[in-house]
Image 1 (cartoon, protein in one colour):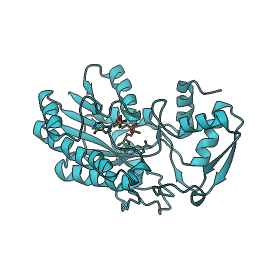
Image 2: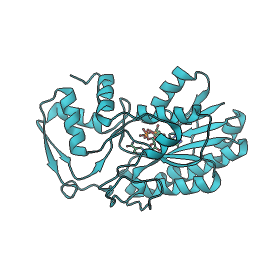
Image 3: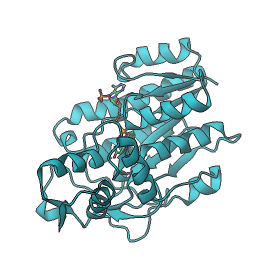
Amino acid sequence: MKILVTGANGQLGTELKKILEATMPSVAIYTDVDELDLTNAKAVESFVVNNDISHIVNCAAYTAVDRAEEEKSLCAQINIDAVKNLALAADANGAKVIHISTDYVFDGTNHRPYRESDKVNPISQYGTTKRKGETVLLALSPEAIIIRTAWLYSAHGNNFVKTMLRLAEKNDEIKVVCDQIGTPTYARDLAAAIVTVLRSHQWIPGIYHFTDEGAASWYDFAKAIFRLAGKQVKVKPILTEDYPTPASRPAYSILDRSLIKATYGVTIPHWEEALADCMAELGAAK
Ligand SMILES: NC(=O)c1ccc[n+]([C@@H]2O[C@H](COP(=O)([O-])OP(=O)(O)OC[C@H]3O[C@@H](n4cnc5c(N)ncnc54)[C@H](OP(=O)(O)O)[C@@H]3O)[C@@H](O)[C@H]2O)c1
């Protein structure tokens, strides 16, 4: 087994590298845009063939959800064209692909957790390009595994946890949206699930949903961050309409995690326990 991990400097890529280096040392090659720009089709194919890659885990993406409404072309190049390049390169060397997608492929009008078979209807450029990335991949690599996740955070990179901790340094009161519901997900837990799939003796292609357990609003998430950090910040709940952003976001995007649990036996912590672990790693827990 020779694994290529792309987007290795991102939140998920960093966590995946940590786990793979600890549990399966020397099995993977880690690249980010400086070593291998995934929008360069020829470079991607040569890299995969020359290194005789057997598995690709694509953690790379364009993830700036609001900026994507302006940078449409760049977002499409990374979330669609680069995925196509990976699929073609995988085919050239007979490699298997695990690709990561998002809850933002849904419009958020559901009233029960989204299953893999539910109708997609992205409402942002980011969501639209991620969905197109899924369809391009499944058309070229029907054997691929796609894992949709949501609300990722980690000690590394930019995310909601770090933004809240930064805001708490200078504010006594912070307004946070309370009418968008999802599941905060520690990138460490998704990385562990990916490793479970890689180490499994079975490879069952298709789409899977993975987030940490439970559900929360951004307001609940912020309150938990401040409680764990021992910060006396007042969190004021506001509505999405009072916090306009360039990109629309699904009001409800809980993902049903049953399929990945039943198929691969992954164990998933509750988001509040996972958050406590991340806060401890950040040195931010009281
Ligand atoms: N973050 C979330 O809340 C969230 C939610 C749902 C799903 N997801 C999905 O989960 C996956 C991992 O997300 P993440 O939060 O770990 O993302 P991230 O931290 O933004 O990392 C993505 C990495 O991809 C790299 N990259 C960008 N363009 C590239 C290119 N052309 N070639 C090679 N690498 C390139 C980025 O480099 P630069 O930083 O230099 O651009 C970055 O290091 C993505 O598929 C994302 O769509 C994320």
